[in-house]
Image (cartoon, rainbow, N blue to C red):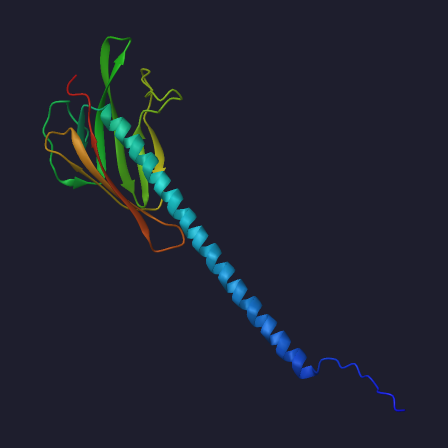
Length: 191
């Protein structure tokens, strides 16, 4: 009787090479999908961050303008009762009446302006309680409000009590911008 010889057969070199190439192609495709997903997630995170910054700026400016009695472009308002040029500006100034000791009214100036691609705020410090610093002899401070600003304009109404703000901020690592437009109005009519 002949005995059947069993041969265990392994993979040939060609089969190993083809398998290796297929595995490398699958891994490359998965890596490409992962990198694409990470890039999309990063861009979406940047959009959320920039929109949050624009919302905070809108709130800050709206709050300060509501406490003002007059808005002006490129020069400090002379009084709460004046007329304004309605030309568009990148230098918005506001006159804020402040009561000291409950009776004496003084004024403070706040200015928002574009310096290169940085939106700046110049004026009295904002204290921890949200109030403006009103102590006699306090100096004006300059602070960065937003970076990577592509454009910033303020269109002031002729009555000096309202403005329409348009701002675009560049999204990091892209050529896109996030845009917002909002209106602000003073609440104080006269000193």
